[in-house]
Amino acid sequence: MKRGVNKQSSATGSIRIISGQYRGRKLPVLNAQGLRPTTDRLKETLFNWLMPYVSQSTCLDMFAGSGSLGFEALSRYAKWCTFIEMAPQAANNIKQNLQTLKIDHSAAEVKQGDAFALCASLPQQFDLIFIDPPFHQQLVPRALDVLIHNNVLAKGALIYVECERQASTYSAPDNWQLIKQKDTSNLSSRLFELNDS
Image (tube, rainbow, N blue to C red):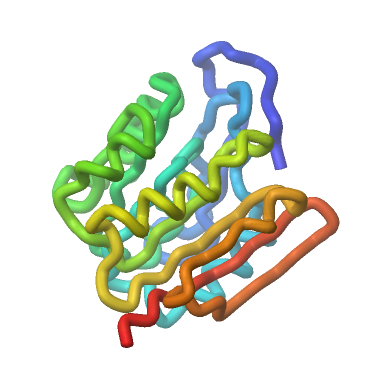
């Protein structure tokens, strides 16, 4: 994992797309404060979990950062991805990488701003939501609250939550079924399914 300290706008690292139509492509990312792309190993685990669900899904990358999770979903034939990123330079970097991959406005959009405010006004529902916020800011409970109280989740939606291990004491709603989980000494990864019954 990368915790950058350089706030310059130059791209100083990269993310790699693991599988799908853009397999093997490396995309430049900013070495910016708080930017922490999901590791390849964990990303591979996550998308093995998601293998039956990604194709033709609509995705929300709620704290996009480098956009690594959203790009991987699009590579695996997700129909749509909305990327939300607070930092203007990181949001612009996602836009540039979408252009590099020739992914147009019919398949993706980038919204720059506060994820909580933007999620409250999104015009569509999503099949797959990635919640991977900056660490040490206690953002997961607020993110779950926004999803619960706004019309964001499609029927049977899957919600992936990645956070530091010490922040994994958050409570998911009773109708969210935990279907996959992986914990390490410093990281918690959980995949929930919305149970509509």
